[in-house]
Image 1 (tube, rainbow, N blue to C red):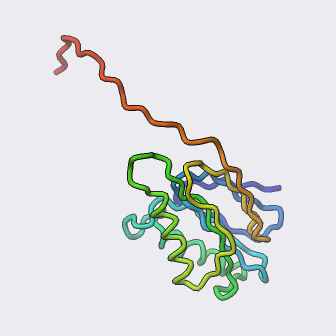
Image 2 (tube, rainbow, N blue to C red):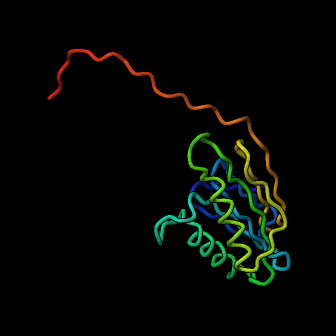
Image 3 (cartoon, rainbow, N blue to C red):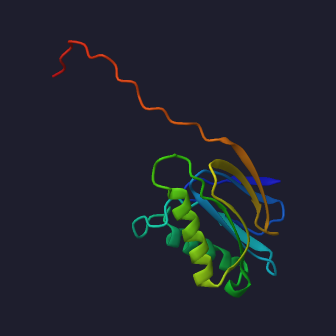
Length: 163
């Protein structure tokens, strides 16, 4: 089995039945696409959907790259299926970036007419994701709760002066 790990802003595409794409998701999302007739698929790892135009981690750019790399391998847009993962709320009390990411994924797929067969989004736990592009099979493992972030402890200042 050939495993490929992707991180933020990366994509992987293939048609080898032995290929598996892996990543770990917190508030980020991955959209897995595949064409069941051509036996080709791919996965991306999106950080923020509204990043600046041309940023590899932005939603629209990452989706365009993913689809465009699948087409030369035989994929056709009308046959694409999707699965959506991630979008956890990893930092309590802060902006829910994960929910915004998941909303982007759902909206993009709906606007593009791509059927989403399954999703595992939200919550407060990170996910380990494995995806087989040739078959569209996905496997997730939810990991332990995100640690609670503590505020830094202020230390007493000393009399050292730096220039």
